[in-house]
Length: 129
Image (cartoon, rainbow, N blue to C red; front, side, top):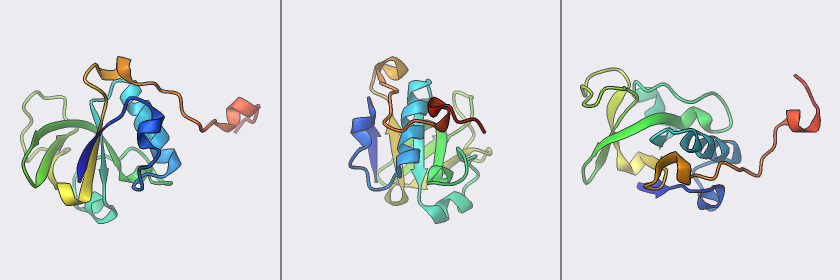
């Protein structure tokens, strides 16, 4: 698929792969300093050894980590903190570009990501769980 540079929520408005909750999650993760967020097609989530961001509303297809390498047809993505992770280690795997999308912060990193999103939680309206 593609690599998408995300500096603000508006960079994701036309993205048909992500629901609004997933868009919020991508912006927040990048603003909090994550190197990249990987979106995977449903079937690929089950095939790979990644820990997904959460459950429901599309975030079960999101993986937080970093892009290690790229070929013409695939990304090597990892959730490992190791500088040069072993390809066979859990949380590190090749994913086909045709079923994945990488969201990254601009070259300046998290400081260049505006974390404001249009969605507001119920707690902002005084509702407690």
